[in-house]
Length: 155
Image 1 (cartoon, rainbow, N blue to C red):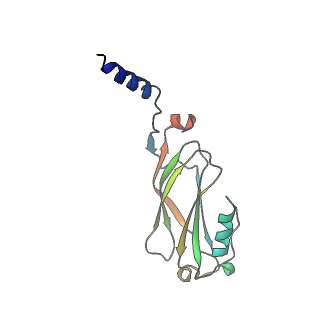
Image 2: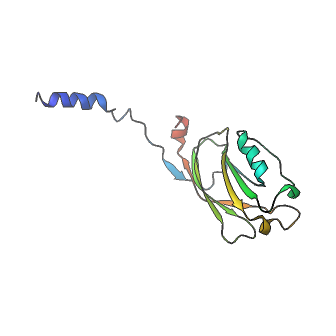
Image 3: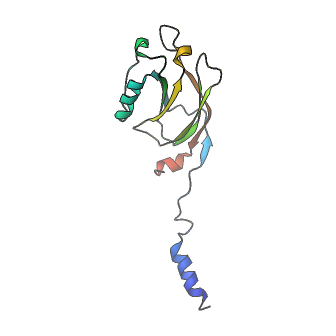
């Protein structure tokens, strides 16, 4: 018994009790969560460098004359404006492209004041065949949100 007493004291004082441990958030499939703002922009290299040189820089649409066919990028910005932590897989459909682009969007905290930015290089020769850049359609393949209780405690 004397040998077990020091071991029991170490275990008792080192490890938190069950009530003290933080519970991990329960993530729920929630395809109807519509508080994630997604924007897609076709930009050239100069505009892309301006976006990343200033955090969360907002910009307007770029005229098609300023877009270079050889250095064309697709900038995708995601921002969670809701009250739940969210993540998922975003599907982008671009005209004149055979396969969609799938983006694994990292966990976004509730009420974000910044954006998650994703950049893809695209072939401008196929896309810039009109007066304006093509419209990018997007949808969520899967979208998960945290349960209500974990977001109110600040996880």
